[in-house]
Image (cartoon, rainbow, N blue to C red):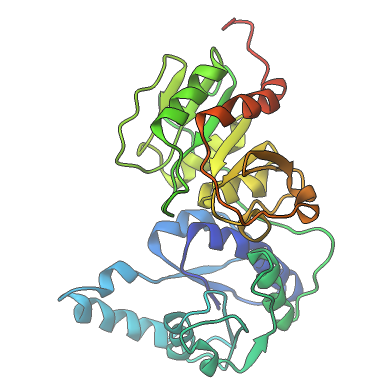
Length: 323
């Protein structure tokens, strides 16, 4: 049993580890405990037979006991031989315990007392990228880590009434973390700078954006599977540090990840050929280890747009039909 209910980016980071566990145990029956909103991410995944829904949102308020009882009953029936806690929190360790798992493995950076429930602990460096920490847990389950990693994703769903041609740049400017999102002015500047090439804006936000004619605003209008499809067919993706950025890093190197206060070595795209922006500098991921002061924070400003356009424009030539 894989216990990794959330979040979107962390689930993406766990996929290579689960693929290696499948390779090590081809006859095993693997169940993934996951929040309902992220289930589409596992559609068609050859490494997972079952999903066990963890409806965390239903376990709040006065109606919690009514929802919790039937969930506990079903969870107790799982009885896995091994539960792997990739979440590393008290509630995820309790899920392993409630399931009746014969053994529970977790990581050394687990919090909230979760380690008290583990039969075996994978020693990890909390400064390492999440993908590398999860691979350590997979090794405890008998997996062998090689040079190449496999990451299974659904192909995604096409959007109705959206033409995937002519080529477009995908811009994901919103994130939950304070100070990660791009300002409206920067979003509009990106659209103007790339004209006449189409810029498709995606993500979840309550903000209203005044977009130029070459911009298609799909904010709050795509499902997770439709977003994956757009990531796959876009000529280039520009994203802030977010779950969709990590999806993009897993399927393409045509990606620029914008980091303000986060360290791209720890939470950036796990793709050596992707690009990152940090403190006014544009770097390949494989160059990050040689750079100092990556923890310093600065917002992305309109003055930074020309440098990104200079990087991306040769990779997304202007369609002659739009020129």
